[in-house]
Image (tube, rainbow, N blue to C red; front, side):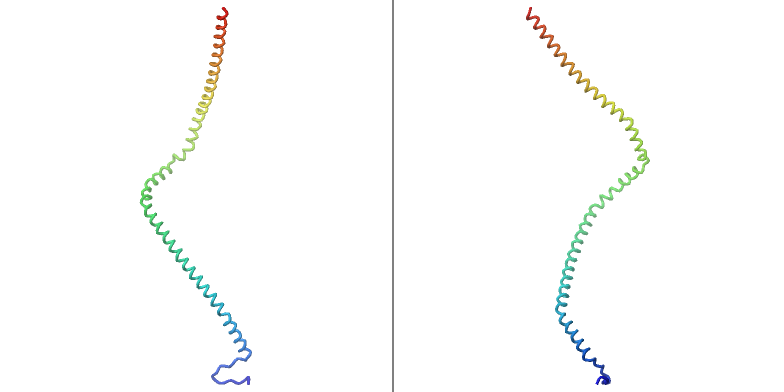
Length: 157
C-alpha cells in the first residue's frame, strides 16, 4: 500500500513521522503554560520599565524646566558682564604682563635688602634696650649699695 496516492490529495507521511510530529506538538503544548508565564512576566517587566522610564523622563523634564528658569534669570546679568570681561581681556593682553615678572624681581631685589636691614636694625635695637635695662638695673643696685654704705657710715659717726 505504500506506493499509491489519491490524485489531488497530498501524500500522507509515514506513521512514524506522524507520531514524532504529534509527540513534538505535545511537548510544545506542555511547555506552552511555562512559556506564557514567562512571556507574561516579561510583559509585566516591560510595563514596569516603561513606567520607570516615563517617571525618569518626567523628572528630567522638571530639571530641564528648572535649568531653563535659572538660565533665564542669569542670562541678562551675564550679558551685562561682557563689556567688563572684554576690558579685562584687553588688560591681560597688554605687554605689561610680560614685563611684570622682571618688575617684581627688581622690586624684590631693591626692597628685600631694605627689609633685611630694618629687621637687623630692630634686632640691634632690642639688644640695646636689653643692655640699657641691665645697665639701669646695675646702676640702681650700685646706687642702692652706695646709699646703704653712706647710711651705715653716718650711723657710725
